[in-house]
Image 1 (cartoon, rainbow, N blue to C red):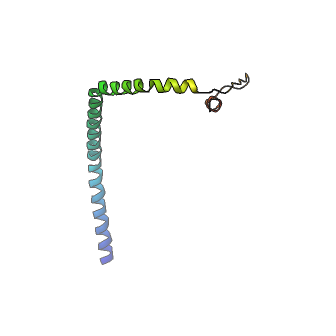
Image 2 (tube, one colour):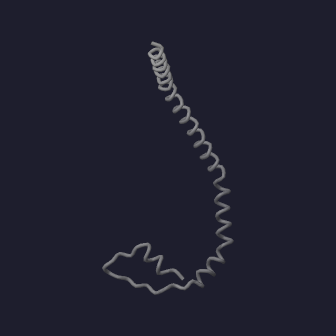
Image 3 (cartoon, rainbow, N blue to C red):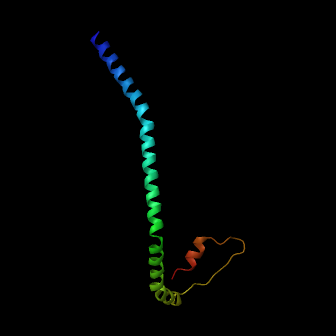
Length: 100
């Protein structure tokens, strides 16, 4: 009899726990969705505010690297190209034929 009561008590408590979880889970999901939306909006706003600064940073970096890139491109030695009209040119072909 005691075993039966213990198992029944455990079953009832488990049922209450599951019922509470079913009620709380949608609230948790709604809360997580709201927080994700707030975070996304904050990140978009921050990126919009910093857009000019990011653009200037990229432009300055490219400007400072331009002479190096031109010099490196001038020294680059290309291998000969062999095109085969029966097979399409794929990325690997281009990559393997341009390696120094």
